Image 1: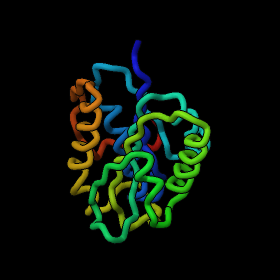
Image 2: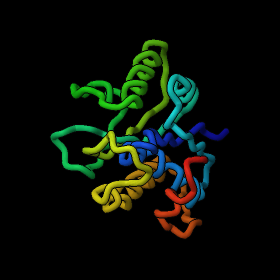
Image 3: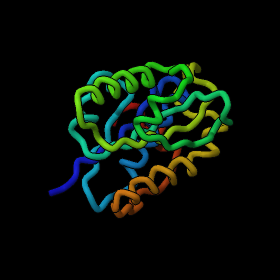
Image 4: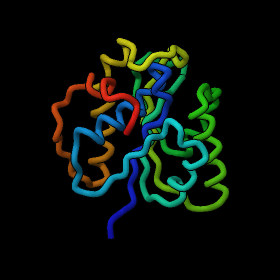
Length: 176
């Protein structure tokens, strides 16, 4: 029996760097194949529907932004659900707030998926523009490597099948 695994690209792609989770998940979906089924989820507007993924899946990888002012832009962190909730900093985006609320509700209701948050620190969460700042474009490959490593850590073989051109993600528009 196969496991239920999902990669959720969180963040609003209309707010420049806040959309990096959305864009990276879309990029991986379009450029890689896997030895086991993985569902890719547009988490930009997932909202309350996140609850079903938290409760019904075995493994979730949520790619999102981190707004910790003590970290340099481009810093990548990996946290589990408990670490994500225990952070004392104020959640600065709608996605961070909704994810926190859904985690709390699901934890009270019972079992939840094994969740890994792979977050990249950003400084600009409000510029209205599709694309990434130069500082995040420079660490795109680093973030990609961390996400692929986490997938491989689940015992899944990862094979690149695309041309690897990052710019194509932004040229394809905002539809999955």
